[in-house]
Structures are given as C-alpha cells and as structure tokens.
Image (cartoon, rainbow over all chains, first blue to last red):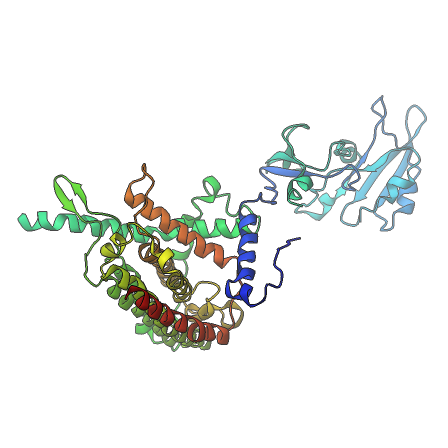
Length: 192
Length: 328
C-alpha cells in the first residue's frame, strides 16, 4: 500500500503544506511508475498458474485412447450434478465412456472430480474463457474435453496474445510459450 | 492594397491564435486523461490511434452528434447565450498575451502578440472577470436547482478569489514599473519574479486554481452534491463550449503564471527558440494543474471561503506592504 513519510510536523508543517506535498510526491511517483493493466484480450493475456481450476480436459494415453474408464465417480461426487457419463464396452473389451458431458453452466470448478478420478483422466485445465452466447453450447462433450487446453506448466505470466473473433470456442490466442512474457506480480510489486 | 498589406500580419496572427485555441482542448483532454490514468497506474486510452491519440477526436464527434437538449421552462435565449458568453473572455485574454520578443519576418518587425497594451495585465484581470457571467447565465437559464446552486457558488467563489488574485500581482507590477506584459517579462531578465515574490506567486497560483475552478476548488461543479453544477442541463455542442472555455482558462492561467512569475520566455536554453521555451513552460504549468487535480480532494465550501478571505487576502496585502517597504 501507499506509504507516505508525513509525520506530525506541527504548525510549521502546516504552513508549508508538508502534507499536501507528500500527497503530490506520491502521485508523482505513481505517474512515472509502470501501469498494472493487462491489455487483454488483444495484446496480452494472463496465463493462470498450474493450480488454476478452469475448463476440464480429459487425458489420453499413448494410443490416443482416453484414460477414462467411465466409473462415474466424478459424476457421483460432483456437488452440482453437472457430469453425465454413459459407459460402453469398446472393441478391445475396455470400459470407456460413450457419453461424457459436462454442463459448464452448472459446474462450480471445485475440482472434486479431479480428486475422485481413479484413472488420472479428468483434470481442470488453464482455460477460463468459456463465455458464449447460447446456453446449449455450455454443455461440452467428450471430444471437446480431449481437445481442451491442459494445465499451464509455465503459468503465472502475462503473455502476448491476439484476438480472433472468428475462432471456434476460444477467441483469444496466446503466443507460443516462452515468448516475451512477464511475471505480472513481480512487476507490480517492484516498489515494495 | 496598402491597407490589406498593413492588416495582413494582424489577420494571420488572429487566425493562428484562434485556430490554435479552438484545437487546444483536443490534446489537453488527451493529456488530462493520460495523466489521470498514470497517476492511477492505468495506461488510459490506448485503442483509438497510437496510445489513444485520436481519442479526443472520437470524443468530440460523439459530443457534437448528441442531442442538443433545452429543458422545459428554461430561458431559451439566455440558455443559448451562456456558453458563448463563457467562451468569449478566455479568447479575449489571449489578445493581450505576448508569446515572445518581436521577430523579423520579410524585413518587417512582427510582434508576437495581438495587441500590445500598456495595461495588458489590467485588461486580462478585467476580462477574465467577465467569465463569471457565463456561469451565472447558464445556472439561471437552466431552470434547475442544481444549476442555480452551482452558479451561486461559482459567483461567490470567483468574486472572492479575484480580489487576492488582483492584489497578488501588484508586487509584480511594482517591480516592473509597468502593467505591460512584455515589460514585466523584460524586467525579469536577471531574476525571475518567483524568487523575489514567492508569496505573491503562492497567492496567485492558489487564486488561479480557484478562478479556473479546478480541483481542489471545483465546488461549482462538485459532482457529489450538485450533479454537474452550472452546466448540469447542458449537452452536446453547448456543453463542449463550456469544456472549451474551461480548458482555455487553464491555459490562460498557466500563461499568466509563466509571464508574471517564471520569466516568460526568458532563460531559454541556447538551442530553443524563445517562443517554444515559453510554450513549454505553459505546458509544464498545465501539467501541474492536472497533477493537482488527480491528487487532492475537494475543499468544503466554508473552507474555500475561509482560505480566500482569511488566508489569501491578508497574505496578498502583506506581500504588497513588505515589497513596498523593501523597495523604498
């Protein structure tokens, strides 16, 4: 927080407006300090930390098959009942989800599904731009979940980005990892 | 033909001054928004043009296309007249403000001011006093209680601050033995008046802030209690005329501060032309006014009056007395 060096300087301080001068000094320092605004969405984008709980994704194994064994534990533990899983047996005889729908309009991103999952399949990723203009679009299906962004391993940074209004679901594309991103928190706490 | 040739420099000067003054609010609004933003650690307007440079144009277009609304039961003639009345004095003042030493253009001497008056300073003080009429008329004609209260406050404020303002420049006039602004500047060749007259500068600066109705003395348009003060009912182009007048008063006060206390165009670094140096100084003062605006809260009304009558007026009188004794 802002700290000024005003102490009670008695009547001499009042005559020379030391308190006002302290205020002016503070605003002058702010005037020439760096701004804290993210220029989101068309210049920069905040990539959240790895711990961030955003849009779900489902992991796949080396053969490209989903990890999920359709045990329905996630849908059981879900406090807002937003996961629908219907199992089936695939040609290899494995139990796999035929339907895996998550209603993002109901989801509260608590991450209990992630904790309950025995097969290391469902995770909550870095994606947070899930707003849309049509409510049925908020129900995401298995293929969306497989394609959704993973956890951000180098998260916690502001990364250059550009706006793509015609894009499929996500209209803000970040530049590749490692491109001149900066740590916003360290940046704004410089003066501390 | 002879007459035309004699009038030509005058016409050119008038065209330049009027043109620049009319366009001045565009960069000033941009500057004000940028300063506000950076004091609050925001970048401010960034989208329209490079770093939002074209934002004022967009704002002006928006203002000009807005509905020109006149409230019911308003005095329509006065309502239409008030913005113009508010705008005239700041323009008039710039006829008396010199921008530098006379220069040689095509072998003829051209003064860098519209009118070299012997009593330039008196003229400026008198004319800027007319500005209060625009405020009174706007408040009265609007048929709105906010507007009336706002204009009552500004009348009281402007009248009480004009007195210390007038007294504070007397020290300067005594030092220069003239009310001619060029002479006042010439008298500061060795030493700027701010060194000799710190109290005079202090009073003039504060009274100027109050005269321009800038924060911390912007009571006539205190949003919290008066809506927008005397221009509550104004919209569109009429409102933009008030805005224009407000910015011009700020520039005028910056110019006066520079001319009277900071040596006008004197003391220019060797590579800068005098006029550019003078304009830079004015820019600095405009920046200071904006810096103050986004630093200080507003004074209460009784505090405002107490500062004017109980602090600034005695100080300015004391300043005259002390400078008089020292000069004897």
